[in-house]
Length: 107
Image (cartoon, rainbow, N blue to C red; front, side):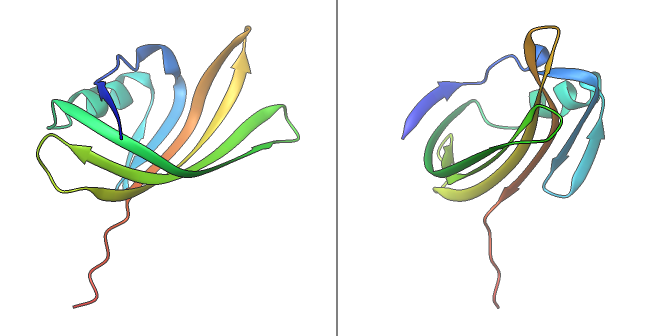
């Protein structure tokens, strides 16, 4: 698993960006940065199992990532993430991002 400390996400977002995190929606750069900064882990490790990328008709890139993550001392969990990247003024920004842990409760 790759390891990382929490990156500063400010440059990846714009005011029109939207994040859906475990079903909760956050609109705009400030709300997204606040949500990501408030996540309770200090360190995270991740392993990407599969990733798919497609160009869109309006020159964006849509990506889907599937993998596993380990936050602090928590057990390893699967995750799915889908996001849309758009090139604005020669910089790629994330306009849309959807994230879910792959948790199943069949009880």
